[in-house]
Structure formats: structure tokens, C-alpha cells
Image 1 (cartoon, rainbow, N blue to C red):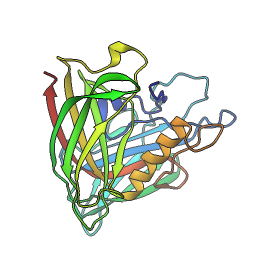
Image 2 (image 1 turned 90 degrees about the vertical axis):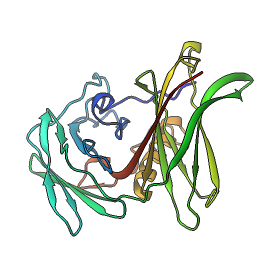
Image 3 (image 1 turned 180 degrees about the horizontal axis):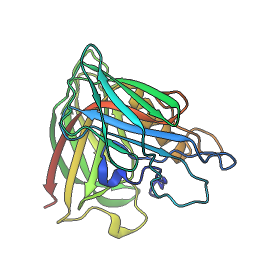
Length: 266
């Protein structure tokens, strides 16, 4: 069965490929918490921070953006850039791009509260290829995408992949580290589970794969979110993922590299 995860930042489907999942909150007092979801990448036009609030469990999932925040991104030892609000709760710096090896600090001031985060952009590991292949999964033959890359030896690396099918983002979380593949040629299959046959990949589908090289804390965020969403944390109820935001906000800030491969399944 597909992993169904509700979205807090539903606007990310249109604005930011780096931000993805809703944070599940206890129904008793879950509304009104501030959520910060942001990224800076090695490509200009992708730096964006979303500032929003959570809602009551019974409310809809519309993006509750917070206007009027002061949002800055500072390169340690370098300049500070103030992001511009382009839509309610959406803050962008279209010309800002990061550099591998540099550390970036996020600061968000909203309604008298200050939230900060720091993330270091890793070196980019080249995505060699991505293609669709048939694979047996629970007795069925399905088409799945395989991404291949050479993991650098002697250095801990963390990866996140995002898959788009005909322009629609697959909701599953695809993350990997090199704990058991350090220095190896990696063939990573992006396995996901669908409720309906029509959701499976098929010949003629346009596939876009995005590969991110992320730091350890961002990997921890996505890993904990995935564990909570699938129930693998041995808890009866979903819990909040491990955030790298200080000051009491939910969410994350990621400085990561970005690569994309696009193809049509033949």
C-alpha cells in the first residue's frame, strides 16, 4: 500500500521540490505551531523558505502561509541575503545559489519569535544515469526507476531522491546513505507502493528524477519522518520528525546539491 502522508506545505508541490511532507501533530494542541521549510541549492532560482502554521487535525490541508516574516540566509564568512515574500508565507531569493563545502545559516523572525538553522552543502556526487527497469515486487512485475552513481570512498554521504511521473511528484520518501556502500557503484531502485494499477509506471510515462546530496541532519529529518509515516518507529501514533530548526518551529532547512535526469519510458 502506498505510504499516505498528509501535507502541511502543500504549496511545495508548486514552489519547492526540496520541501515535501507534513508534520503530524497531536490532535489536542497541534494548531498554531510555526513550520519553517526551506532550502538553498547549487542552482540559482531554487532558494526558497516557506513559513506557515499548523492547523487543527480536522481542518483542511491548505497551506497556511505566514506573511510579514523577516527571512535571511547567511553564508558563514560571507554575505547575508534577505529573501523577498512572493506569496503569503513564500520567501524567495531567485539569484542566490550555494556552493559545496559552504555552511549556510537561516534566520526567520515572525510574530516576535526567532527561528534559526544551519546546514552545510555537501560535495556533489554525480548521478550517472537513471532509467526504468522491470522488477518483481510481491509476486508482481512492475516498472521501477533505478538511479546509478559512484559513491566516493572514505567519506560519509547522504542522498535524497524525488521522482516525478508526468509532472506529478511521487509522495514516497527516497533516501539513502553509504553506511553499507562506501566507495561502491550504487544501483538504487526507487521503490514505491501504489493502491491502484493505474498508479504504476508504464511505457510512455515521462519520468523526472532529482538527486540531492544532503547533510546528516537533513537525512535524519527525512528518515525520522519516513519512520513515523510508516509506523516503523514502534509508536502507536505518528510523531514529529527530528527538526534542525532551533527556536521551537517544526520543519527543516537544507543546503544541498541538485541534479536532474528526465526520460520517457520506452
